[in-house]
Image (cartoon, rainbow, N blue to C red):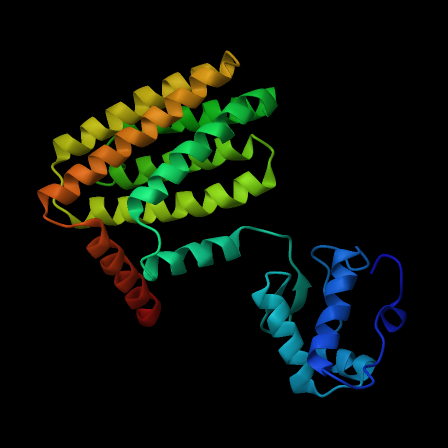
Length: 277
């Protein structure tokens, strides 16, 4: 706690909606900075005494804070409730629900990502430090090396590195809102792309062609970052994403699968994995 000891930070609940009052007090303490990010809240028993509330009521309030993404509840003897840094996790969960409800299509997802990642890349070229650009170059070197020593596992490894490159360039814009939203869209587009490539019968020669095209794109994109050419980098990333979507659509068409069916298949597969684990 930064400013006040625990006993003075929170006040006993007198009456009314007890869980809501506990929630409000803890939330306000986090937002005001009285409780730091990463800091552990007092144990539930101590919070019971402070708020003069039942254990179930305290737990209810903490659960709501967890659902709001403000705290993380860790189990075990060394666990506890910790203040959590803001992230785009809840946006990602909301996006997944929109897909399940049929309110967002894969085409719309790709269009949104294409436009917004292009803007983020333009900003990233202006805002990136020399060290960050060097880190991007190191990722490109890893991509090149993975392709040069390709084997049966190369395809998955190659695109895992490429996903990191996309995440790297959007982080270089130094805009947390853009980063959270785009990380969620990248995760979802990645899920559909990977499922398609792993499930459908794609010839090795086609996979090689996709990797070669991706390498050329990233060599040009990294070069544009080095030259600090924002508009060129932005146009390159748009072309790169459009090419991926066209290839993705082509494989769906060859296998007589439409995008709506794919959404249902992917989410069923995801739920099955959760049940199995």
